[in-house]
Image (cartoon, rainbow over all chains, first blue to last red):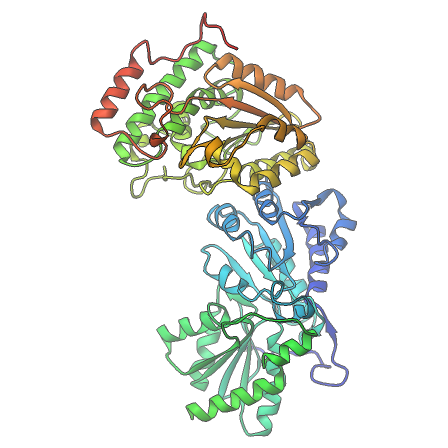
Length: 326
Length: 292
Protein backbone atom coordinates (compact mmCIF):
# COMPACT_ATOMS: atom_id res chain seq x y z
CA UNK A 1 0.00 0.00 0.00
CA UNK A 2 1.33 3.41 -0.90
CA UNK A 3 2.03 5.87 1.88
CA UNK A 4 -0.82 8.27 2.75
CA UNK A 5 0.55 11.79 2.43
CA UNK A 6 -0.69 14.00 5.24
CA UNK A 7 -1.07 17.72 4.82
CA UNK A 8 2.30 19.36 5.49
CA UNK A 9 0.90 21.68 8.13
CA UNK A 10 -0.68 18.91 10.18
CA UNK A 11 0.38 18.92 13.85
CA UNK A 12 2.30 22.20 13.34
CA UNK A 13 1.51 25.74 14.40
CA UNK A 14 0.24 26.33 10.85
CA UNK A 15 -2.44 23.61 11.20
CA UNK A 16 -5.37 24.34 8.85
CA UNK A 17 -8.94 24.13 10.12
CA UNK A 18 -12.35 24.17 8.42
CA UNK A 19 -15.75 22.59 9.18
CA UNK A 20 -16.51 19.40 7.25
CA UNK A 21 -19.84 20.96 6.22
CA UNK A 22 -17.89 23.51 4.13
CA UNK A 23 -16.36 20.68 2.12
CA UNK A 24 -19.82 19.21 1.63
CA UNK A 25 -21.12 22.52 0.28
CA UNK A 26 -18.32 22.69 -2.30
CA UNK A 27 -18.66 19.02 -3.15
CA UNK A 28 -22.41 19.25 -3.72
CA UNK A 29 -21.95 22.13 -6.14
CA UNK A 30 -19.33 20.15 -8.03
CA UNK A 31 -21.55 17.06 -8.05
CA UNK A 32 -24.29 19.25 -9.51
CA UNK A 33 -21.94 20.41 -12.25
CA UNK A 34 -20.94 16.83 -13.06
CA UNK A 35 -24.48 15.43 -13.19
CA UNK A 36 -27.60 17.42 -13.91
CA UNK A 37 -29.79 14.83 -12.21
CA UNK A 38 -28.34 15.85 -8.82
CA UNK A 39 -30.97 17.81 -6.87
CA UNK A 40 -30.84 19.20 -3.33
CA UNK A 41 -33.56 19.39 -0.69
CA UNK A 42 -33.27 21.25 2.57
CA UNK A 43 -35.39 21.55 5.71
CA UNK A 44 -34.99 25.24 6.54
CA UNK A 45 -31.25 25.08 7.29
CA UNK A 46 -29.82 25.87 3.88
CA UNK A 47 -26.84 28.03 4.82
CA UNK A 48 -26.21 26.18 8.03
CA UNK A 49 -25.67 22.92 6.14
CA UNK A 50 -23.93 24.83 3.32
CA UNK A 51 -26.44 24.04 0.59
CA UNK A 52 -26.60 27.68 -0.45
CA UNK A 53 -23.69 27.18 -2.87
CA UNK A 54 -25.75 24.61 -4.77
CA UNK A 55 -28.89 26.75 -4.50
CA UNK A 56 -27.10 29.74 -6.02
CA UNK A 57 -25.62 27.65 -8.84
CA UNK A 58 -28.74 25.60 -9.60
CA UNK A 59 -31.80 27.41 -8.24
CA UNK A 60 -34.22 25.22 -10.19
CA UNK A 61 -32.73 22.06 -8.74
CA UNK A 62 -32.95 23.23 -5.15
CA UNK A 63 -36.13 22.40 -3.21
CA UNK A 64 -37.03 23.97 0.12
CA UNK A 65 -39.32 21.67 2.12
CA UNK A 66 -39.53 23.64 5.36
CA UNK A 67 -39.08 22.19 8.83
CA UNK A 68 -40.40 18.77 7.86
CA UNK A 69 -37.77 16.04 7.98
CA UNK A 70 -40.17 13.17 7.31
CA UNK A 71 -41.29 14.88 4.12
CA UNK A 72 -37.67 15.78 3.30
CA UNK A 73 -36.61 12.18 2.71
CA UNK A 74 -39.91 10.86 1.35
CA UNK A 75 -40.17 13.58 -1.31
CA UNK A 76 -36.55 12.74 -2.11
CA UNK A 77 -37.54 9.10 -2.53
CA UNK A 78 -40.13 10.20 -5.11
CA UNK A 79 -37.56 12.35 -6.90
CA UNK A 80 -35.24 9.34 -7.03
CA UNK A 81 -38.07 7.31 -8.57
CA UNK A 82 -38.28 10.01 -11.23
CA UNK A 83 -34.58 9.51 -12.00
CA UNK A 84 -32.99 12.17 -9.82
CA UNK A 85 -30.12 11.90 -7.34
CA UNK A 86 -31.48 13.75 -4.32
CA UNK A 87 -29.26 15.08 -1.52
CA UNK A 88 -31.30 15.88 1.59
CA UNK A 89 -29.83 17.91 4.40
CA UNK A 90 -30.76 18.85 7.92
CA UNK A 91 -29.15 18.41 11.32
CA UNK A 92 -28.38 14.81 12.16
CA UNK A 93 -30.51 15.11 15.30
CA UNK A 94 -33.55 15.50 13.03
CA UNK A 95 -32.47 13.57 9.95
CA UNK A 96 -31.92 10.65 10.57
CA UNK A 97 -32.92 11.37 14.18
CA UNK A 98 -36.59 11.97 13.52
CA UNK A 99 -37.27 10.27 10.19
CA UNK A 100 -35.48 6.95 10.56
CA UNK A 101 -38.47 4.83 9.53
CA UNK A 102 -39.07 6.89 6.42
CA UNK A 103 -35.41 6.49 5.48
CA UNK A 104 -35.62 2.76 6.04
CA UNK A 105 -38.83 2.15 4.10
CA UNK A 106 -38.69 4.66 1.27
CA UNK A 107 -34.93 4.93 0.68
CA UNK A 108 -33.14 1.83 2.01
CA UNK A 109 -35.66 -1.02 1.60
CA UNK A 110 -36.93 0.76 -1.51
CA UNK A 111 -33.27 0.91 -2.64
CA UNK A 112 -33.37 4.44 -3.99
CA UNK A 113 -30.22 6.60 -4.11
CA UNK A 114 -31.45 9.11 -1.53
CA UNK A 115 -28.55 10.86 0.20
CA UNK A 116 -29.16 11.72 3.84
CA UNK A 117 -26.77 14.41 5.00
CA UNK A 118 -26.74 14.90 8.76
CA UNK A 119 -25.11 18.17 9.73
CA UNK A 120 -24.11 19.37 13.21
CA UNK A 121 -23.49 15.82 14.37
CA UNK A 122 -21.47 14.93 17.43
CA UNK A 123 -20.08 16.81 20.41
CA UNK A 124 -18.57 19.60 18.28
CA UNK A 125 -22.12 21.01 18.11
CA UNK A 126 -21.12 22.43 21.48
CA UNK A 127 -23.33 25.18 22.93
CA UNK A 128 -26.57 23.83 21.44
CA UNK A 129 -26.48 21.04 24.01
CA UNK A 130 -27.64 17.45 24.18
CA UNK A 131 -30.76 17.73 21.99
CA UNK A 132 -28.65 18.82 19.04
CA UNK A 133 -25.45 16.83 19.68
CA UNK A 134 -26.46 13.77 17.67
CA UNK A 135 -24.50 10.80 18.97
CA UNK A 136 -26.61 7.84 17.87
CA UNK A 137 -26.72 8.42 14.11
CA UNK A 138 -23.82 6.17 13.12
CA UNK A 139 -25.40 3.22 14.91
CA UNK A 140 -28.89 4.02 13.58
CA UNK A 141 -27.77 4.15 9.98
CA UNK A 142 -25.26 1.33 10.13
CA UNK A 143 -27.86 -1.30 11.02
CA UNK A 144 -29.93 -0.51 7.93
CA UNK A 145 -29.44 -2.95 5.01
CA UNK A 146 -28.48 -1.23 1.69
CA UNK A 147 -27.29 1.90 3.51
CA UNK A 148 -23.80 3.34 3.00
CA UNK A 149 -22.39 5.30 5.98
CA UNK A 150 -19.60 7.83 5.51
CA UNK A 151 -18.02 10.03 8.20
CA UNK A 152 -15.36 12.21 6.59
CA UNK A 153 -12.30 13.13 8.60
CA UNK A 154 -11.92 16.69 7.39
CA UNK A 155 -13.40 19.21 4.96
CA UNK A 156 -11.25 18.12 2.03
CA UNK A 157 -12.36 14.55 2.43
CA UNK A 158 -15.99 15.66 2.91
CA UNK A 159 -15.85 17.30 -0.51
CA UNK A 160 -14.52 14.13 -2.13
CA UNK A 161 -17.03 11.96 -0.27
CA UNK A 162 -19.94 14.10 -1.47
CA UNK A 163 -18.87 13.77 -5.10
CA UNK A 164 -18.36 10.02 -4.66
CA UNK A 165 -21.78 9.53 -3.03
CA UNK A 166 -23.49 11.30 -5.94
CA UNK A 167 -22.52 8.46 -8.23
CA UNK A 168 -22.61 5.37 -5.99
CA UNK A 169 -26.26 4.60 -6.85
CA UNK A 170 -27.06 3.71 -3.23
CA UNK A 171 -29.00 5.18 -0.31
CA UNK A 172 -26.28 6.80 1.75
CA UNK A 173 -25.63 8.71 4.95
CA UNK A 174 -23.02 11.47 5.22
CA UNK A 175 -22.20 12.71 8.72
CA UNK A 176 -20.96 16.28 9.07
CA UNK A 177 -19.65 18.49 11.82
CA UNK A 178 -20.52 22.11 12.54
CA UNK A 179 -17.32 23.48 14.04
CA UNK A 180 -13.96 24.11 12.44
CA UNK A 181 -11.83 21.01 12.81
CA UNK A 182 -8.26 20.26 11.71
CA UNK A 183 -7.46 19.28 8.13
CA UNK A 184 -5.06 16.36 7.74
CA UNK A 185 -5.68 15.24 4.14
CA UNK A 186 -4.77 16.95 0.88
CA UNK A 187 -6.38 17.27 -2.52
CA UNK A 188 -4.18 14.34 -3.60
CA UNK A 189 -5.06 12.01 -0.71
CA UNK A 190 -7.01 8.95 -1.78
CA UNK A 191 -10.69 8.61 -0.94
CA UNK A 192 -12.87 5.76 -2.00
CA UNK A 193 -16.14 4.70 -0.43
CA UNK A 194 -15.50 1.51 1.54
CA UNK A 195 -11.78 2.08 2.07
CA UNK A 196 -9.86 2.71 5.29
CA UNK A 197 -6.42 4.32 5.23
CA UNK A 198 -3.32 3.85 7.34
CA UNK A 199 -2.22 7.41 8.09
CA UNK A 200 0.65 6.46 10.35
CA UNK A 201 2.13 2.97 10.35
CA UNK A 202 3.02 1.45 13.72
CA UNK A 203 3.38 -1.93 15.36
CA UNK A 204 2.18 -1.77 18.99
CA UNK A 205 -1.48 -0.83 18.76
CA UNK A 206 -4.05 -0.04 16.03
CA UNK A 207 -5.88 3.23 16.58
CA UNK A 208 -9.05 3.38 14.48
CA UNK A 209 -10.62 6.80 14.14
CA UNK A 210 -13.49 8.20 12.15
CA UNK A 211 -14.61 11.75 11.45
CA UNK A 212 -13.02 14.46 13.55
CA UNK A 213 -11.44 11.91 15.89
CA UNK A 214 -8.86 10.74 13.38
CA UNK A 215 -6.92 13.97 13.81
CA UNK A 216 -7.01 13.58 17.60
CA UNK A 217 -5.48 10.13 17.13
CA UNK A 218 -2.61 11.65 15.15
CA UNK A 219 -2.01 13.93 18.14
CA UNK A 220 -2.25 11.00 20.55
CA UNK A 221 0.08 8.84 18.45
CA UNK A 222 2.74 11.53 18.53
CA UNK A 223 2.50 11.71 22.34
CA UNK A 224 2.53 7.93 22.67
CA UNK A 225 5.68 7.73 20.54
CA UNK A 226 7.48 9.83 23.15
CA UNK A 227 6.69 7.06 25.62
CA UNK A 228 7.91 4.34 23.32
CA UNK A 229 4.54 3.25 21.99
CA UNK A 230 4.54 2.86 18.21
CA UNK A 231 0.88 3.32 17.34
CA UNK A 232 -0.69 2.73 13.93
CA UNK A 233 -3.38 5.27 13.05
CA UNK A 234 -6.07 3.95 10.72
CA UNK A 235 -8.61 6.41 9.36
CA UNK A 236 -12.00 4.79 8.76
CA UNK A 237 -14.19 7.29 6.86
CA UNK A 238 -16.58 4.60 5.65
CA UNK A 239 -18.28 2.80 8.51
CA UNK A 240 -20.39 0.79 6.09
CA UNK A 241 -19.29 -1.08 4.09
CA UNK A 242 -16.38 -1.47 6.50
CA UNK A 243 -12.94 -2.09 4.99
CA UNK A 244 -12.54 -5.47 6.71
CA UNK A 245 -9.25 -6.18 5.00
CA UNK A 246 -7.44 -3.06 6.15
CA UNK A 247 -8.85 -3.28 9.69
CA UNK A 248 -7.92 -6.94 10.11
CA UNK A 249 -4.48 -6.48 8.53
CA UNK A 250 -3.68 -3.81 11.08
CA UNK A 251 -4.96 -5.85 14.03
CA UNK A 252 -3.06 -8.90 12.81
CA UNK A 253 0.12 -6.84 13.05
CA UNK A 254 -0.50 -5.09 16.39
CA UNK A 255 -2.65 -7.67 18.21
CA UNK A 256 -4.71 -4.95 19.93
CA UNK A 257 -6.78 -1.94 18.99
CA UNK A 258 -8.62 1.17 20.09
CA UNK A 259 -11.60 2.76 18.34
CA UNK A 260 -12.44 6.44 18.75
CA UNK A 261 -15.54 8.27 17.60
CA UNK A 262 -17.44 11.42 18.48
CA UNK A 263 -20.55 9.28 19.03
CA UNK A 264 -21.98 6.55 21.24
CA UNK A 265 -19.52 3.68 21.43
CA UNK A 266 -22.45 1.25 21.20
CA UNK A 267 -23.24 0.36 17.62
CA UNK A 268 -20.98 2.89 15.91
CA UNK A 269 -17.40 2.52 14.69
CA UNK A 270 -16.53 0.68 17.90
CA UNK A 271 -19.45 -1.64 17.35
CA UNK A 272 -18.49 -2.30 13.74
CA UNK A 273 -14.84 -3.05 14.43
CA UNK A 274 -15.37 -5.18 17.55
CA UNK A 275 -18.07 -7.19 15.75
CA UNK A 276 -15.66 -7.86 12.90
CA UNK A 277 -12.74 -8.70 15.18
CA UNK A 278 -14.74 -10.96 17.48
CA UNK A 279 -15.59 -13.19 14.53
CA UNK A 280 -12.29 -13.14 12.67
CA UNK A 281 -9.50 -12.03 14.97
CA UNK A 282 -10.46 -11.83 18.64
CA UNK A 283 -7.89 -9.48 20.14
CA UNK A 284 -8.35 -6.89 22.93
CA UNK A 285 -10.06 -3.75 21.63
CA UNK A 286 -10.95 -0.67 23.66
CA UNK A 287 -13.84 1.48 22.44
CA UNK A 288 -13.58 5.21 23.17
CA UNK A 289 -16.24 7.80 22.51
CA UNK A 290 -19.40 8.67 24.35
CA UNK A 291 -20.28 5.99 26.86
CA UNK A 292 -24.03 5.64 27.22
CA UNK A 293 -24.80 9.21 28.19
CA UNK A 294 -25.92 12.43 26.48
CA UNK A 295 -23.84 15.48 25.76
CA UNK A 296 -24.24 18.97 27.24
CA UNK A 297 -23.65 22.62 26.44
CA UNK A 298 -20.21 24.19 26.33
CA UNK A 299 -17.81 25.46 23.71
CA UNK A 300 -17.13 22.71 21.19
CA UNK A 301 -13.61 22.16 22.43
CA UNK A 302 -14.71 22.24 26.08
CA UNK A 303 -17.24 19.50 25.46
CA UNK A 304 -14.83 17.33 23.46
CA UNK A 305 -12.24 17.67 26.23
CA UNK A 306 -14.82 17.00 28.95
CA UNK A 307 -15.57 13.70 27.27
CA UNK A 308 -11.86 12.91 27.09
CA UNK A 309 -11.74 12.89 23.30
CA UNK A 310 -8.89 15.35 22.76
CA UNK A 311 -5.49 14.00 21.73
CA UNK A 312 -3.89 14.37 25.19
CA UNK A 313 -6.67 12.54 27.01
CA UNK A 314 -6.81 9.87 24.33
CA UNK A 315 -3.06 9.27 24.69
CA UNK A 316 -3.50 8.73 28.43
CA UNK A 317 -6.43 6.33 27.98
CA UNK A 318 -4.64 4.43 25.23
CA UNK A 319 -1.53 4.18 27.43
CA UNK A 320 -3.63 2.73 30.26
CA UNK A 321 -5.18 0.22 27.87
CA UNK A 322 -1.72 -0.81 26.68
CA UNK A 323 -0.67 -1.44 30.28
CA UNK A 324 -3.73 -3.67 30.80
CA UNK A 325 -3.20 -5.80 27.74
CA UNK A 326 0.58 -5.98 27.88
CA UNK B 1 -47.98 -2.19 -26.18
CA UNK B 2 -48.89 0.80 -24.11
CA UNK B 3 -52.31 0.96 -22.57
CA UNK B 4 -53.87 4.33 -23.12
CA UNK B 5 -56.74 5.42 -20.92
CA UNK B 6 -60.31 5.59 -22.01
CA UNK B 7 -60.56 2.49 -24.15
CA UNK B 8 -63.04 0.57 -21.99
CA UNK B 9 -66.67 1.37 -21.36
CA UNK B 10 -67.82 2.03 -17.81
CA UNK B 11 -69.63 -1.31 -17.88
CA UNK B 12 -66.39 -3.09 -18.80
CA UNK B 13 -64.57 -1.31 -15.98
CA UNK B 14 -67.27 -2.47 -13.55
CA UNK B 15 -66.71 -6.01 -14.78
CA UNK B 16 -62.97 -5.61 -14.13
CA UNK B 17 -63.76 -4.48 -10.57
CA UNK B 18 -65.87 -7.56 -10.11
CA UNK B 19 -63.04 -9.83 -11.24
CA UNK B 20 -60.62 -7.97 -8.96
CA UNK B 21 -62.93 -8.51 -5.97
CA UNK B 22 -63.13 -12.22 -6.62
CA UNK B 23 -59.37 -12.43 -7.00
CA UNK B 24 -58.88 -10.57 -3.72
CA UNK B 25 -61.02 -13.13 -1.89
CA UNK B 26 -59.13 -16.05 -3.46
CA UNK B 27 -55.75 -14.48 -2.72
CA UNK B 28 -56.54 -13.72 0.89
CA UNK B 29 -57.99 -17.15 1.51
CA UNK B 30 -54.87 -18.77 0.05
CA UNK B 31 -52.61 -16.46 2.03
CA UNK B 32 -54.36 -17.12 5.33
CA UNK B 33 -53.63 -13.58 6.48
CA UNK B 34 -54.03 -10.05 5.18
CA UNK B 35 -56.53 -7.25 4.89
CA UNK B 36 -60.00 -7.78 3.43
CA UNK B 37 -62.12 -4.69 3.93
CA UNK B 38 -59.87 -2.01 2.44
CA UNK B 39 -58.97 -3.79 -0.80
CA UNK B 40 -62.63 -4.71 -1.48
CA UNK B 41 -63.68 -1.13 -0.82
CA UNK B 42 -61.03 0.18 -3.22
CA UNK B 43 -61.78 -2.24 -6.07
CA UNK B 44 -63.89 0.15 -8.11
CA UNK B 45 -61.41 3.00 -7.74
CA UNK B 46 -58.36 0.89 -8.56
CA UNK B 47 -60.15 -0.78 -11.49
CA UNK B 48 -61.05 2.67 -12.82
CA UNK B 49 -57.45 3.85 -12.48
CA UNK B 50 -55.95 0.82 -14.22
CA UNK B 51 -58.63 0.40 -16.88
CA UNK B 52 -60.06 3.87 -17.39
CA UNK B 53 -57.56 6.52 -16.36
CA UNK B 54 -53.87 5.67 -16.31
CA UNK B 55 -51.42 5.30 -19.16
CA UNK B 56 -48.96 2.47 -18.66
CA UNK B 57 -47.36 -0.48 -20.37
CA UNK B 58 -47.68 -3.73 -18.44
CA UNK B 59 -44.98 -5.34 -20.58
CA UNK B 60 -42.61 -2.44 -20.02
CA UNK B 61 -43.34 -1.28 -16.47
CA UNK B 62 -40.72 1.51 -16.54
CA UNK B 63 -42.09 2.88 -19.84
CA UNK B 64 -41.00 6.49 -19.83
CA UNK B 65 -44.37 7.92 -20.81
CA UNK B 66 -46.32 6.18 -18.07
CA UNK B 67 -48.42 7.77 -15.37
CA UNK B 68 -47.39 6.93 -11.82
CA UNK B 69 -49.48 5.21 -9.18
CA UNK B 70 -48.51 5.33 -5.50
CA UNK B 71 -50.43 3.26 -3.00
CA UNK B 72 -49.72 5.07 0.25
CA UNK B 73 -51.74 2.66 2.40
CA UNK B 74 -49.65 -0.36 1.44
CA UNK B 75 -51.75 -2.84 3.42
CA UNK B 76 -54.42 -2.56 0.70
CA UNK B 77 -51.98 -3.92 -1.90
CA UNK B 78 -54.03 -7.06 -2.73
CA UNK B 79 -56.30 -4.80 -4.79
CA UNK B 80 -53.29 -3.46 -6.69
CA UNK B 81 -51.82 -6.92 -7.27
CA UNK B 82 -55.20 -8.13 -8.59
CA UNK B 83 -55.49 -5.12 -10.91
CA UNK B 84 -51.90 -5.54 -12.12
CA UNK B 85 -52.47 -9.22 -12.92
CA UNK B 86 -55.69 -8.33 -14.75
CA UNK B 87 -53.76 -5.64 -16.66
CA UNK B 88 -51.11 -8.17 -17.72
CA UNK B 89 -48.12 -7.27 -15.55
CA UNK B 90 -47.85 -10.92 -14.50
CA UNK B 91 -49.69 -14.22 -14.70
CA UNK B 92 -52.83 -14.47 -12.62
CA UNK B 93 -51.65 -17.73 -11.07
CA UNK B 94 -49.04 -15.74 -9.20
CA UNK B 95 -51.79 -14.01 -7.21
CA UNK B 96 -52.13 -17.15 -5.09
CA UNK B 97 -48.53 -16.72 -3.88
CA UNK B 98 -49.51 -13.59 -1.92
CA UNK B 99 -47.64 -13.40 1.40
CA UNK B 100 -45.95 -16.76 0.80
CA UNK B 101 -42.21 -17.33 1.20
CA UNK B 102 -40.34 -16.45 -1.98
CA UNK B 103 -43.26 -14.59 -3.55
CA UNK B 104 -42.88 -11.32 -5.40
CA UNK B 105 -46.25 -10.41 -3.87
CA UNK B 106 -45.07 -9.43 -0.41
CA UNK B 107 -47.57 -8.77 2.36
CA UNK B 108 -46.83 -5.10 1.92
CA UNK B 109 -45.58 -3.94 -1.48
CA UNK B 110 -41.85 -3.86 -2.24
CA UNK B 111 -40.82 -2.02 -5.36
CA UNK B 112 -37.59 -3.91 -5.87
CA UNK B 113 -39.38 -7.26 -5.98
CA UNK B 114 -42.18 -6.60 -8.44
CA UNK B 115 -41.80 -4.50 -11.60
CA UNK B 116 -44.72 -2.12 -11.92
CA UNK B 117 -44.73 -1.03 -8.29
CA UNK B 118 -43.49 2.55 -7.91
CA UNK B 119 -42.83 2.44 -4.18
CA UNK B 120 -42.26 0.31 -1.13
CA UNK B 121 -45.09 1.00 1.25
CA UNK B 122 -46.74 -0.18 4.43
CA UNK B 123 -45.76 2.15 7.25
CA UNK B 124 -48.42 4.81 6.77
CA UNK B 125 -48.01 8.41 5.75
CA UNK B 126 -45.15 8.37 3.26
CA UNK B 127 -46.68 7.53 -0.12
CA UNK B 128 -48.15 10.97 -0.65
CA UNK B 129 -44.72 12.57 -0.23
CA UNK B 130 -43.22 10.13 -2.73
CA UNK B 131 -46.00 10.92 -5.19
CA UNK B 132 -45.35 14.62 -4.58
CA UNK B 133 -41.65 14.10 -5.31
CA UNK B 134 -42.45 12.57 -8.69
CA UNK B 135 -45.04 15.26 -9.42
CA UNK B 136 -42.47 17.94 -8.57
CA UNK B 137 -39.99 16.36 -10.96
CA UNK B 138 -42.50 16.14 -13.82
CA UNK B 139 -43.70 19.71 -13.34
CA UNK B 140 -40.48 21.58 -12.55
CA UNK B 141 -37.52 19.48 -13.68
CA UNK B 142 -38.69 17.39 -16.62
CA UNK B 143 -41.24 19.66 -18.33
CA UNK B 144 -43.70 16.79 -18.74
CA UNK B 145 -47.11 18.32 -18.24
CA UNK B 146 -48.95 15.45 -19.90
CA UNK B 147 -48.15 12.84 -17.28
CA UNK B 148 -50.02 12.43 -14.01
CA UNK B 149 -49.26 11.03 -10.58
CA UNK B 150 -52.06 9.19 -8.81
CA UNK B 151 -51.95 8.42 -5.11
CA UNK B 152 -54.35 6.62 -2.79
CA UNK B 153 -54.20 7.20 0.96
CA UNK B 154 -56.37 5.69 3.63
CA UNK B 155 -58.46 7.91 5.87
CA UNK B 156 -57.01 6.51 9.10
CA UNK B 157 -53.64 7.18 7.49
CA UNK B 158 -54.40 10.90 7.67
CA UNK B 159 -53.59 10.69 11.39
CA UNK B 160 -49.94 10.66 10.31
CA UNK B 161 -48.09 13.98 10.44
CA UNK B 162 -46.08 13.07 7.34
CA UNK B 163 -49.31 13.34 5.28
CA UNK B 164 -49.81 16.95 6.26
CA UNK B 165 -46.16 17.77 5.59
CA UNK B 166 -46.77 16.45 2.07
CA UNK B 167 -50.05 18.36 1.83
CA UNK B 168 -48.26 21.61 2.68
CA UNK B 169 -45.47 20.84 0.23
CA UNK B 170 -47.80 20.01 -2.69
CA UNK B 171 -49.88 23.08 -1.89
CA UNK B 172 -46.86 25.36 -1.82
CA UNK B 173 -45.55 24.11 -5.17
CA UNK B 174 -49.04 23.87 -6.75
CA UNK B 175 -48.37 20.33 -7.94
CA UNK B 176 -51.25 20.21 -10.37
CA UNK B 177 -50.27 16.85 -11.87
CA UNK B 178 -50.77 15.19 -8.49
CA UNK B 179 -54.19 13.56 -8.04
CA UNK B 180 -54.79 12.08 -4.61
CA UNK B 181 -57.68 9.92 -3.46
CA UNK B 182 -58.54 9.65 0.21
CA UNK B 183 -60.26 6.31 0.77
CA UNK B 184 -62.98 7.65 3.07
CA UNK B 185 -64.37 4.43 4.51
CA UNK B 186 -64.60 5.78 8.05
CA UNK B 187 -62.86 2.84 9.70
CA UNK B 188 -59.44 2.19 11.12
CA UNK B 189 -58.10 -0.62 13.28
CA UNK B 190 -59.34 0.66 16.63
CA UNK B 191 -62.80 1.66 15.38
CA UNK B 192 -64.48 4.49 13.56
CA UNK B 193 -62.21 7.28 12.40
CA UNK B 194 -64.26 9.95 14.10
CA UNK B 195 -63.89 8.14 17.44
CA UNK B 196 -60.23 7.22 17.14
CA UNK B 197 -59.04 10.62 15.87
CA UNK B 198 -61.61 12.86 14.20
CA UNK B 199 -60.76 13.95 10.65
CA UNK B 200 -63.65 16.28 9.94
CA UNK B 201 -63.85 18.91 8.59
CA UNK B 202 -61.82 16.92 6.08
CA UNK B 203 -62.79 18.95 3.03
CA UNK B 204 -61.92 22.16 4.85
CA UNK B 205 -58.57 20.78 5.97
CA UNK B 206 -57.43 20.04 2.40
CA UNK B 207 -58.83 23.30 1.09
CA UNK B 208 -56.90 25.26 3.68
CA UNK B 209 -53.70 23.52 2.53
CA UNK B 210 -54.29 24.87 -0.99
CA UNK B 211 -55.81 21.80 -2.63
CA UNK B 212 -58.73 21.47 -5.02
CA UNK B 213 -61.21 19.18 -3.30
CA UNK B 214 -63.93 16.94 -4.70
CA UNK B 215 -66.09 14.37 -2.93
CA UNK B 216 -67.48 11.37 -4.74
CA UNK B 217 -69.06 7.93 -4.41
CA UNK B 218 -66.07 5.61 -4.68
CA UNK B 219 -68.16 2.78 -6.10
CA UNK B 220 -69.41 4.71 -9.11
CA UNK B 221 -67.08 4.43 -12.08
CA UNK B 222 -68.63 7.37 -13.86
CA UNK B 223 -68.20 9.62 -10.81
CA UNK B 224 -64.58 8.52 -10.44
CA UNK B 225 -63.83 9.24 -14.11
CA UNK B 226 -65.58 12.60 -13.96
CA UNK B 227 -63.62 13.59 -10.88
CA UNK B 228 -60.32 12.60 -12.51
CA UNK B 229 -61.27 14.66 -15.56
CA UNK B 230 -61.96 17.65 -13.33
CA UNK B 231 -58.72 17.15 -11.39
CA UNK B 232 -56.76 17.13 -14.65
CA UNK B 233 -58.44 20.37 -15.67
CA UNK B 234 -57.27 22.11 -12.50
CA UNK B 235 -53.86 23.46 -13.41
CA UNK B 236 -52.98 25.67 -10.47
CA UNK B 237 -53.39 23.33 -7.49
CA UNK B 238 -52.98 19.71 -6.45
CA UNK B 239 -56.22 17.74 -6.37
CA UNK B 240 -57.68 15.56 -3.69
CA UNK B 241 -60.74 13.44 -4.30
CA UNK B 242 -62.40 12.33 -1.08
CA UNK B 243 -63.66 8.97 -2.20
CA UNK B 244 -66.50 7.61 -0.09
CA UNK B 245 -66.29 3.85 0.01
CA UNK B 246 -67.85 1.00 1.93
CA UNK B 247 -65.27 -1.21 3.61
CA UNK B 248 -65.71 -4.79 2.43
CA UNK B 249 -67.92 -3.61 -0.46
CA UNK B 250 -69.48 -6.45 -2.41
CA UNK B 251 -69.42 -9.04 0.37
CA UNK B 252 -72.46 -8.63 2.57
CA UNK B 253 -71.01 -9.97 5.79
CA UNK B 254 -67.86 -7.86 5.52
CA UNK B 255 -69.41 -4.52 4.66
CA UNK B 256 -69.08 -1.81 7.29
CA UNK B 257 -67.48 -4.21 9.79
CA UNK B 258 -64.12 -2.91 10.98
CA UNK B 259 -63.20 -6.38 12.28
CA UNK B 260 -62.52 -7.30 8.65
CA UNK B 261 -59.83 -4.62 8.40
CA UNK B 262 -56.95 -6.99 9.05
CA UNK B 263 -58.54 -10.43 8.66
CA UNK B 264 -58.72 -12.83 5.68
CA UNK B 265 -61.72 -15.07 4.97
CA UNK B 266 -61.42 -18.75 5.86
CA UNK B 267 -62.44 -21.41 3.33
CA UNK B 268 -66.16 -21.34 4.14
CA UNK B 269 -66.29 -17.55 4.26
CA UNK B 270 -64.41 -17.33 0.96
CA UNK B 271 -66.91 -19.70 -0.67
CA UNK B 272 -69.79 -17.57 0.56
CA UNK B 273 -68.08 -14.37 -0.56
CA UNK B 274 -67.27 -15.71 -4.04
CA UNK B 275 -70.82 -16.98 -4.50
CA UNK B 276 -72.13 -13.57 -3.61
CA UNK B 277 -69.68 -11.77 -5.87
CA UNK B 278 -70.68 -14.03 -8.75
CA UNK B 279 -74.36 -13.33 -8.23
CA UNK B 280 -76.12 -10.31 -9.66
CA UNK B 281 -76.45 -8.79 -6.20
CA UNK B 282 -72.73 -8.75 -5.64
CA UNK B 283 -72.01 -7.05 -8.89
CA UNK B 284 -71.50 -3.37 -8.35
CA UNK B 285 -73.31 -1.63 -11.15
CA UNK B 286 -74.76 1.81 -11.22
CA UNK B 287 -76.56 1.73 -14.50
CA UNK B 288 -79.90 3.39 -14.06
CA UNK B 289 -79.16 4.28 -10.44
CA UNK B 290 -79.23 7.79 -9.15
CA UNK B 291 -76.41 9.17 -7.04
CA UNK B 292 -76.21 12.11 -4.78
